[in-house]
Image (cartoon, rainbow, N blue to C red; front, side, top):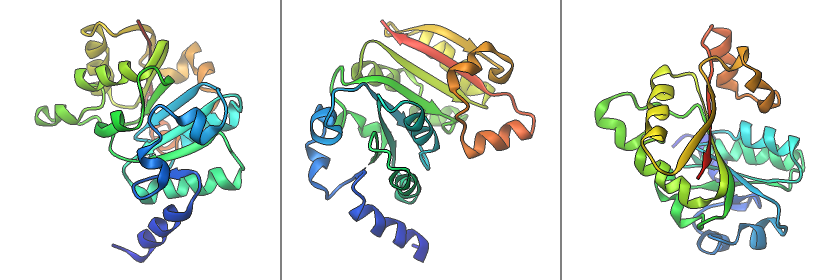
Length: 219
């Protein structure tokens, strides 16, 4: 482990806006995010595989009347998001360190209003479909966390993941696709993104890649 990573991990141990193994709320937070962490009844929005939390933070700044949680397994990444959220005094932003496959240990049925996936790894090899975050198993899991009419969003630069996710959603009984586009920046749907973009999204668009977007509603 590099010295820099050690510093990030040490930071995480004391950061008040990070929940991870070893902290009191880690085993108590499921079903209790509003009560035990945010201390309000505002809607909860989760960004899965959040990386440095750029989208979590951006949405948190835009919507102070909602609560936002960025979840990622990489401690050095969420440490950077945590530091920015703390500097910006974003009390409606939290970070959770954990693997997405274990999300059911942290979110209860009907606890969330929205879920975002922003540029996740498309896992294009057939043997990696089990890890693809929009496969049928994961979509079923997300459906369990969302309130009725809750929203699921995907942003990706991957044609493969975009097409795969449209097919996955169509084959489930959980979601209805409300909107989708294979070129977000040339679509009226761009207005729903409030100018929030990640570092990698900026790079992708500068290189000429189109950004795809899907919005689906829980049935």
